[in-house]
Length: 295
Image (tube, rainbow, N blue to C red; front, side, top):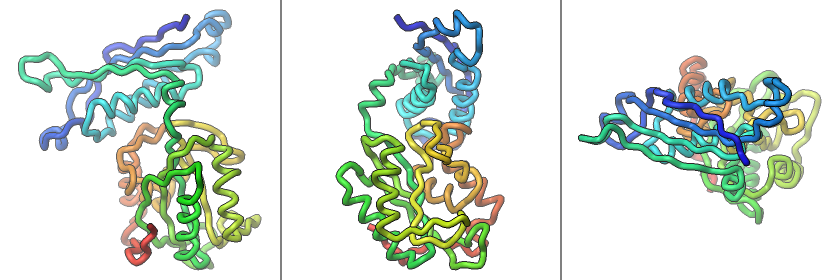
């Protein structure tokens, strides 16, 4: 038997809808969330580390909704469910999203969905991979994309524009070309890295040195894996560089502007916009390379 944790009548404001006025003005959004989990361990131990941290989860939901810009309440509900199931203790989640006053003569209009961890497991993993190269970069980026597309267990869903970026750290080297790709796969993060991405890097003669900012033929990094928060070897997912560097955030936002960062709750478009405003991304010699046609 699964226990239930209820978060009732969470009233927030965000952008959701298809009409012009709905796209321009934030509106009330009412959320009711039920988390299904085994609370018996926490009930015996009285230790917060054994419990579902609904406070942290709620903060993530608030950040996500307040930064939202979805067209459909169905999509917003699905994003909230995914955030809930990112906690490994949550076995299933029921989410009701309502828009008060959205329909004449009706108190509210809403949608209610329920998903289990198995429901999400049956769907392919959605993975964002960041690409970078400053050694024969046009050829190596194209080769990396071609090899991803040729892999039997990887489906390339979307590819960003390519940007030319100044090097970070070790500045005495050629500029980089950077892009991002969205893929779908049944592979786990660790298998995708070791069985697909690293072999592509090896095939393109990626040489790793003590200088992590050194020139390279190709760099293929998992930066987002579903809504998961995980450690992949020495790397943290979501990649902290999403929040630090425009050359990572902007290509991601190009292909999935409304995808939510699972730790900050912000849409990728919001993150990219803040970084470009703060760093002068487009005015600092970092140019879109329209002459590089990957695909």
